[in-house]
Length: 67
Image 1 (cartoon, rainbow, N blue to C red):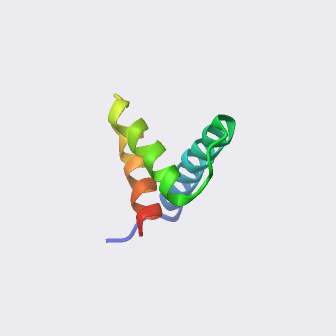
Image 2: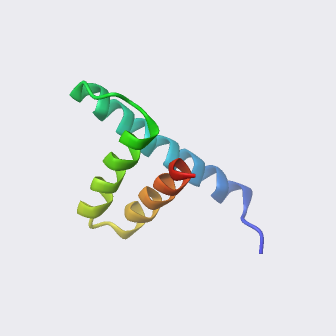
Image 3: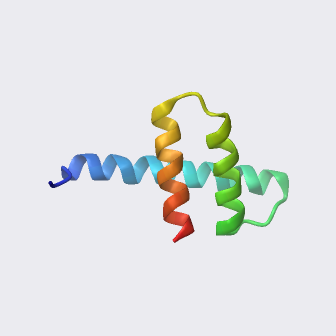
Protein backbone atom coordinates (compact mmCIF):
# COMPACT_ATOMS: atom_id res chain seq x y z
CA UNK A 1 0.00 0.00 0.00
CA UNK A 2 1.35 3.41 -0.91
CA UNK A 3 0.38 6.76 0.52
CA UNK A 4 -0.47 9.38 -2.12
CA UNK A 5 2.09 12.19 -2.15
CA UNK A 6 -0.62 14.83 -1.67
CA UNK A 7 -1.93 13.11 1.47
CA UNK A 8 1.59 12.84 2.87
CA UNK A 9 2.16 16.54 2.23
CA UNK A 10 -1.12 17.48 3.92
CA UNK A 11 -0.23 15.32 6.92
CA UNK A 12 3.17 17.00 7.16
CA UNK A 13 1.59 20.44 6.98
CA UNK A 14 -1.04 19.63 9.61
CA UNK A 15 1.45 18.08 12.05
CA UNK A 16 3.92 20.95 11.55
CA UNK A 17 1.14 23.44 12.25
CA UNK A 18 0.16 21.67 15.49
CA UNK A 19 3.78 21.58 16.70
CA UNK A 20 4.21 25.24 15.80
CA UNK A 21 1.02 26.22 17.64
CA UNK A 22 2.16 24.30 20.71
CA UNK A 23 5.56 26.02 20.60
CA UNK A 24 3.92 29.45 20.40
CA UNK A 25 1.54 28.64 23.27
CA UNK A 26 4.46 27.52 25.44
CA UNK A 27 6.43 30.65 24.50
CA UNK A 28 3.49 32.87 25.47
CA UNK A 29 3.40 31.15 28.87
CA UNK A 30 7.11 31.77 29.32
CA UNK A 31 7.81 28.02 29.41
CA UNK A 32 10.90 26.38 28.00
CA UNK A 33 10.30 25.01 24.53
CA UNK A 34 11.65 21.49 24.17
CA UNK A 35 10.27 18.23 22.76
CA UNK A 36 9.08 16.95 26.16
CA UNK A 37 7.19 20.17 26.87
CA UNK A 38 5.60 20.13 23.42
CA UNK A 39 4.56 16.49 23.84
CA UNK A 40 2.99 17.28 27.23
CA UNK A 41 1.12 20.25 25.73
CA UNK A 42 -0.12 18.21 22.76
CA UNK A 43 -1.17 15.32 25.02
CA UNK A 44 -3.27 17.70 27.12
CA UNK A 45 -4.82 19.07 23.92
CA UNK A 46 -5.54 15.54 22.69
CA UNK A 47 -7.31 14.59 25.93
CA UNK A 48 -9.69 17.52 25.72
CA UNK A 49 -10.25 17.40 21.94
CA UNK A 50 -13.64 16.23 20.64
CA UNK A 51 -12.79 16.24 16.92
CA UNK A 52 -11.52 12.75 16.02
CA UNK A 53 -9.52 14.00 13.05
CA UNK A 54 -7.68 16.56 15.16
CA UNK A 55 -7.12 13.92 17.86
CA UNK A 56 -5.54 11.68 15.22
CA UNK A 57 -3.13 14.38 14.03
CA UNK A 58 -2.26 15.31 17.60
CA UNK A 59 -1.40 11.63 18.14
CA UNK A 60 0.82 11.63 15.04
CA UNK A 61 2.63 14.74 16.27
CA UNK A 62 3.10 13.22 19.72
CA UNK A 63 4.41 10.01 18.19
CA UNK A 64 6.91 11.82 15.97
CA UNK A 65 8.24 13.91 18.86
CA UNK A 66 8.46 10.90 21.15
CA UNK A 67 10.80 8.91 18.91
